[in-house]
Image 1 (cartoon, rainbow, N blue to C red):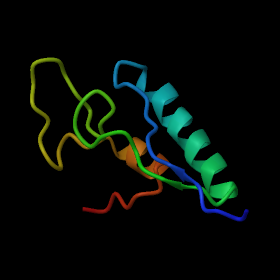
Image 2: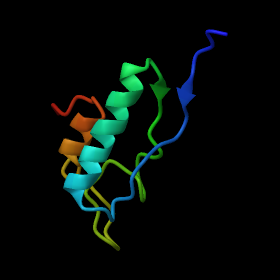
Image 3: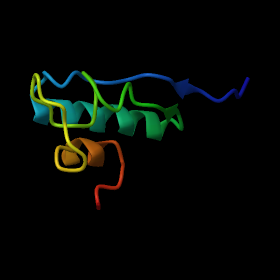
Image 4: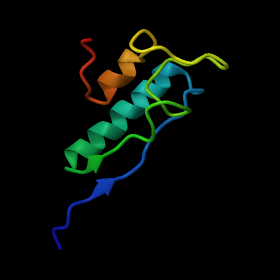
Length: 79
């Protein structure tokens, strides 16, 4: 049918070790890109967010950005 496909949600909880989390994002983003599938990440702030988080502490922008994760998502980290 040649219909476009969207991966509407994907993510990996911040409680997973960061290296594994970044690798997982890199793998999923790469596989979706190879297949021409558009994507959206689960959330910006929260359990699946793009910040290095500490329980009970609100992350600051841009200081607490998880730059390796942003790079794995294919996003520009030059701020």
